[in-house]
Image (cartoon, rainbow, N blue to C red):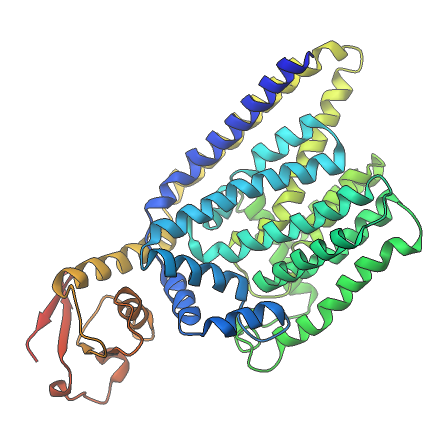
Length: 462
């Protein structure tokens, strides 16, 4: 194909992938903050800047995911309590990550057809929808960014058996530290780089020095996150259960997410993983072997804890789409082994069919499941914020507020966070009768008293 036509095809492919991504994600821009957002934002907003930056350097500290906290703190400082800029930054990172996935696929396979298919499939997955709809998933977005920048920098140098220069080593280690600062899934990176070295057999023992350093860096990090005052160490939803039963049930849930199914049971999930490995071995495909390693080890950090949402599979999702894209291209080559002149047009048809099929599946999934757990909490927080701002546009610093009733459950701190963040006042007192009961508060000690009835907040006279 002439170079000018190839450039046109590249641009057209990129435009299709970007349009596909925006088609399924643009609605998320209109969503408000949810409970996790206001909790995460309040947590980091009340910390001194120096403490946040210190946690970034000392990545093994018990500070909760400081890189994600920096995102919240920085955007809040620039845009205030407005969800739109948060969503726009997240979408921009999502677009960048599509490019990273394409770069990773290109480095591993060298195939433009694999790159196109992998980028298209990676762009959106309905069971991972939180990644693109909730700012609270910034931890997964940014972890993917630093994780795969580090991986691509490493592989780009090592794929030609080149020596890793000191500046590249520093860049890789900085990206790895930032990935660890963002989310615990990053601990899988040394294992995946080791898998690349073993599968592609580049160089001698010296090739493992940097991988070994990264693996050793994991030790204080894992200890710091699982002991002491760490939020993860004291959160029952992150308490690991190292058993075969937990492992298989977790994988059944995660494979259901990936394949957009509900019927996969533990034994069949493990059978699918073994089948993927058998295909890689049977085809003697190093690329499929590496994709399998990304799938398995990219999910391993959440394989022994209670089920999480599909967003935790974001790093491993690159392995799934790489595996699928490679298999599709292998089948094309097998069918066209005597007709190589048809390779480009057939590749375009397959690309269009994959986009049509995955897009149709995503639309059906979204129509079938209204996801109230995703959309209702932001609506509730948006209603409180807008109504309270209308009732009381300004509040004196250190104001004392009492809510006799509100639209949140008894043990939620969300109204507390919302009021302080929306009015940018940490000195404000926000009490709720729900959380003060059975002790009856002295209403005379509050400057502002509010209640809630029939979907509306009302101010009462103290």
